[in-house]
Each structure stands twice: as C-alpha cells, then as structure tokens.
Image 1 (cartoon, rainbow, N blue to C red):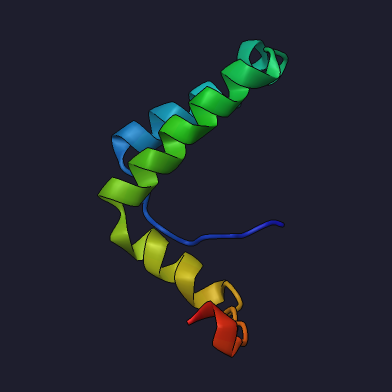
Image 2 (image 1 turned 135 degrees about the horizontal axis):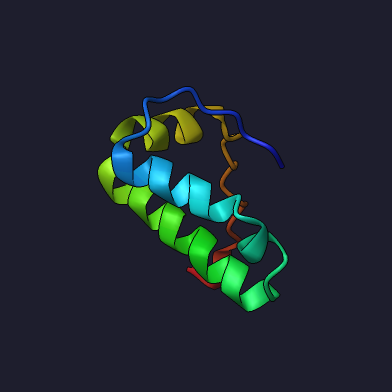
Length: 72
C-alpha cells in the first residue's frame, strides 16, 4: 500500500528522510531498516497531526463485524 502525503516536513523529518535514503541503510539488514522506519513513523505520529488526519481520512473504514448472541 502506498500513501502519498502532502505536508511540510520539519528539519528533523528532513534529516530522517535523508538517513532513510542513505545507501548504507537501504542495504542494511531488515531489522535495522524496520527500526529506522518505525522511528520516523513515531516522529510523524507525535509531531505532525496533519499527517495522521490525512492517513485516517484516506484509509477505508472497517465495518463492525456482526456479533452473535453467544459472544455477549
């Protein structure tokens, strides 16, 4: 799934994006790449509410599953 966001990145975002595109990290092991990506996503989550609002708006809304009587 690809999601294109239009937001104004802060200086910390720009630094993280350049680090993520660094060939050393691109060819690093999967665990290292996942950790750096998670760090960037945490930064977006806590520091850029406009990004979260755009993501929530674009994601499909999941319908509530039917609950059967014996689950109540």
